Image (cartoon, rainbow, N blue to C red):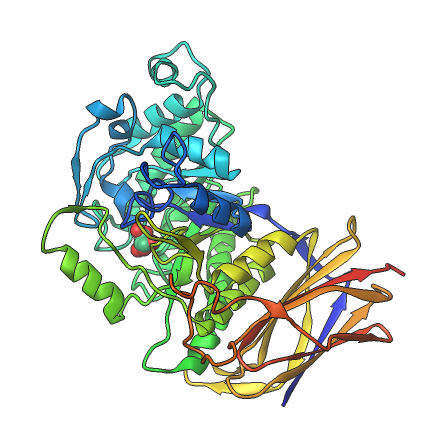
Length: 511
Ligand code: AHR
């Protein structure tokens, strides 16, 4: 048995919970759109082709904002292809994913779906093959009320009211040599600055996200952010971060500690933003949009084989990187969400990539069913229960040794406190693979507590740490009650099973 102590004090807060932290991502990639959120002819499809079974799961997952339409896809995408009469839309080659894009689904279809799903739209523009002109035209098309060329075209295409999209990504991963239209930091920084300026001249209420590094192992990480921010600081509102995590060579201990790496990555980008702010004598604060993160077995056979197979022929919506997530992956996702929440003062937007089928919490089969992957659960519970203020926790825990990060705390935790509801939500993972962890939570200054709910995701009976949810067994891994949670003299006691992620909701009486 390992031990940990968490001290919570309502006076030690980090920031309000940014609701946009629980974002997701829909890319025209693989089967995320086609046969994912959209499949006319599916038994559950509505008259616009939206799959209602998938929509129900999306509502249950609870993303607040969804990034669209890519991803690598957007760097070769012509947004005008996806508007107007569907029969007249061109079929195009998508070089990013070696796919035929029919353009049957475009901006209007996505806006309609987003309304059904009750999510904010975060639109990415193409700064790979395009530039200032196409970007400002798109803002005019989407957000201008009417009486101009592009806004009237939108109205003729069936949307009388403006879409009023507030969040815009200035391209995608342009630091990456794989990206169509890859640029140096100087080339991108200047383009982002001028594009941002022109877009805000059309609508000054929009918020803009400049492209940061594709991950922290990029050779240009750090200097890329510094250069881009130096050019565009005054025009942008956020800089992006992307990172995917995976277990390598069976080193589960290091994989389970990846939130330590995410913490360090975020701290590094915050330091770079603040250095540019100070040197440039800027007064406003640029924040972070961590707009792609997840577990992705990018180097695993699964993903690589799929892409290799696909490259043999041009197909519509091929099966791409449909990773099947395990108990271990769900615990890691829980800790990554904790890291994002702990940095909620500066990470104000985050998007798990992606939403359906492609490295996703929701899976669906063409003509078949839809189900929740293991990683669905930590996201859904945190999106539902994180409310009010993020608490700054003091954690004192037994250590476990990892090859990648040295000794790390055996538990990983984050918590929120909503004064309005009188509720504390605690999200805590046990990284230990073989030992349970006894955790005590001292609720200083929050008075007597009552446990409202306590749930845990862990290895199911008869399963192991690799167990996942599949079409034939969609509920193999889920949340079960965490038993034995007790409160004594202002301290909550809980025992976390080995390899687990738990959520405990407490009602507190502020003293
Ligand atoms: O989410 C899958 C891909 O990962 C995205 O298209 C790209 O931005 C990233 O490299």
